[in-house]
Image (cartoon, rainbow, N blue to C red; front, side, top):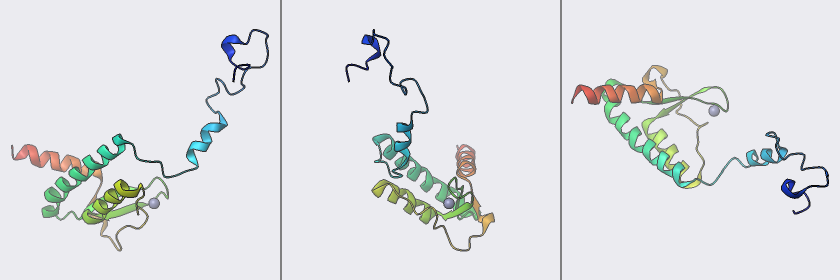
Length: 131
Ligand SMILES: [Zn+2]
């Protein structure tokens, strides 16, 4: 690793061709394994999502909302998750880094599901209303 070090390569020899190339093909290797070990940050964020999800369920169920709808980046379809199913997904993500995202609720009623952002806005509005 010494003869290619650019700082000391004074004889004009070829530098590492990928040295400053953002498309270094070795980066692609990072995408091959779909399940990365969760970092502490990942775990904290998932735990926060779980806590938020419980708030959503408490706030929205009385209004006829049964769960969360997710625009799936993988298959381009909308997936519908009951509160329990979404919670199970997050818990399994914490457990082994995988989710059953492509196995959503059977025969969902789309009008009973809202996006995460909508649920957050709704819950925030309710909370400030009762303040
Ligand atoms: Zn999907």
